[in-house]
Length: 120
Ligand SMILES: [Zn+2]
Image (cartoon, rainbow, N blue to C red):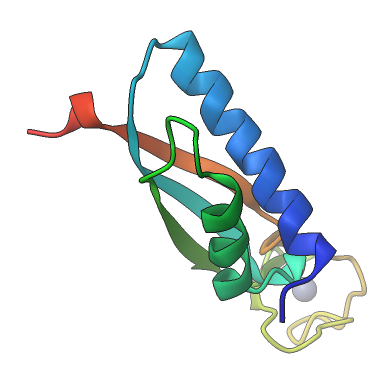
């Protein structure tokens, strides 16, 4: 299901792509790589669908949105253990500290923008 959440994210991603394209005098964007953290609750298919809807008529009209999911991971502030946080973790399984910080999975940013000039 498409939500306002994905639509507004797609719009801000497209804004960044168009700004970059303009700044570098790019005529055609062919691919946009985006890293999407598991913690963002973004549905990748839905985001790609929204992006396809709004890209029409821009230099990114034929751009493919390439989404890279980033799993949740964390770090214990006390013992330094790296934690798999695909399940919610409220205390460190190694030292029982509650000083657990999410270090990965909140990402939502453009990784790269490919233009027709960067091909071949
Ligand atoms: Zn610990």
